[in-house]
Image 1 (cartoon, one colour):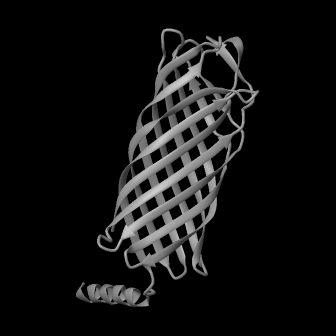
Image 2: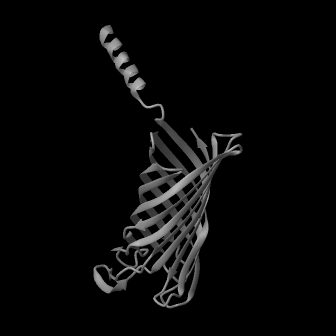
Image 3: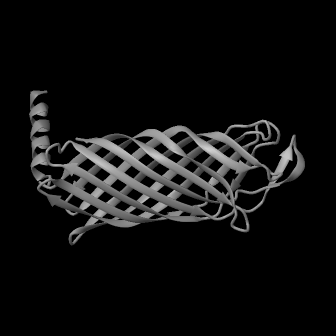
Length: 260
């Protein structure tokens, strides 16, 4: 038994000695707030709906660097209530609020190229949107899920005051899978939107006097075209069709993270 333990210890020491010196793990946990804005447009380009407000949330990130390649993953979660301003099907103005939850998770890699890093990542996005009903209109319960491909680049400057990082990525979004509830007035509807496209910009500051802290900022913009028609039923009987309007999602996220 002791000989097996010695052999195991020798194997572990050998593996550690063979690992490259540049290989390292890094993780972070952050808290912050996200300014979320969602706008929908009609066929003529007229604004139909606008939602906006601040959502509190948190994030978790991890990365493993070996040589010139870094593998990274992360997840974030923001939830709260935001203001809703829109119109009913009859065209009258409606004001309410929306319970919103934005959650995403991603996995990707970044490769060093000169003084920059070229990055690619796959991300899954979940959006829960419950529009509260009013005296003039029933509420809606919407769920969105979509996959996104991020392609971009970033760079970091190391100064006496600390490290400053900037990155930018194009976002290619698969059609959103959407499920809509109508507060029991109609049967739930499932539909897929069309492919979307967008942009993500990020910045981070890690001060030299407190290297375990990092202040982050991120801006997201995503546009999704109008969906096709989906059948609308009530207790199985045909009542018409429903579509998801062209919509644009914008978000500004500010975070304070602990790096370890």
